[in-house]
Image 1: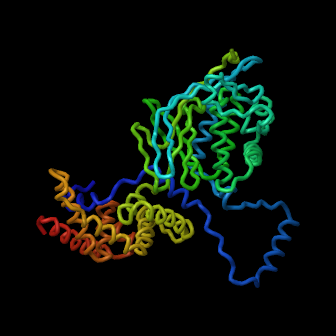
Image 2: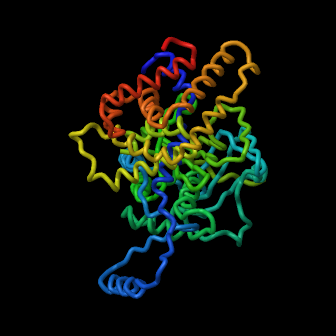
Image 3: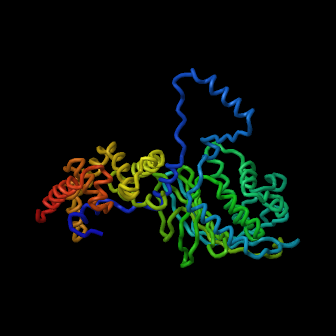
Length: 306
Length: 153
């Protein structure tokens, strides 16, 4: 680096770009341009004829853009390579058996933000979660009910990515493309967020419930399916001296990360980031973002209610 | 290409027009590079200077934003802080004033040299100007900044 005083003074006027800025740049580059309305409808009949011919001639893949749908673009190339490498690691893992009367216990530590529209205060958080992967239900003890995201029986959503069970996991397609298509259909539509943004969020929740219940093949299949998602980027992070890989989905002003162990390809946590402006984040911790939770999972007997 | 060059381009653009505009500019740079990839001639130099050239052309549309940012730095008050910080703010104010007073060409050349750390030949390739023009422009630009900082010409 040139160290002449005038060059140093010139360089001092700017700052290093942040990881968030780099992610936003990728997002802006891959975001499709706004659709421009044609000034004339002269060509409309020609366009209609072309569409009809295309439909008659073969299958037509329609990528719609905008709220509630997904971008017709790939994730960053290094993310695809990272996901494939994680899939290879995950496929080599050992399966875990969860018998009748057993549940997945998740114990987590981290931070999370809460607050109003203009301020977000980051606080320390813990998580204790017992998930019955046979029934697809959180079964926390009464004293833990505040931390359980349960719904009254009879009002539960259908079994699926929102409510995974062993049976549902076993029925998932093994082909990565079909698996991703299946998950995208399951996730449905939302007025504001992209399909892949919602899917990534629900996958993070699914992992927090029952990552341990996945077979090595299911873990690997999911990771290979993610290579077809849009809006993903990757980075290496260190948490408490532990090296992890964060795969982030960026959707408007929200960045949501699923955290992977590079040695096993398994999910060990999640994190979220606010990439917009106008919100003051009060963060007393050495954590970049508005939430981060690392967890460990184990198979335990179903907790007995008193 | 993005993985390899985006951070350097973003540093350069952020330095000139701030984070928000820089993100748009760098995204556009890659889109233009992709559209014009047939125009890239490896025999005329590496890809990074070519990308800096596209980026610099795009930055010209934001000259007012750049000057506004420089004038904002120039307006900082060093007397509100003490010690080394005060000296640094003072140097930044003077450098910002000098940069704002440079011609567009001088600013392009100086920032490609100081921030992007390109060599003379790379700057010439990026801006599509003769090597001698780069040398003379850079000499004049640096002389003005040094003079503003109170150093030797």
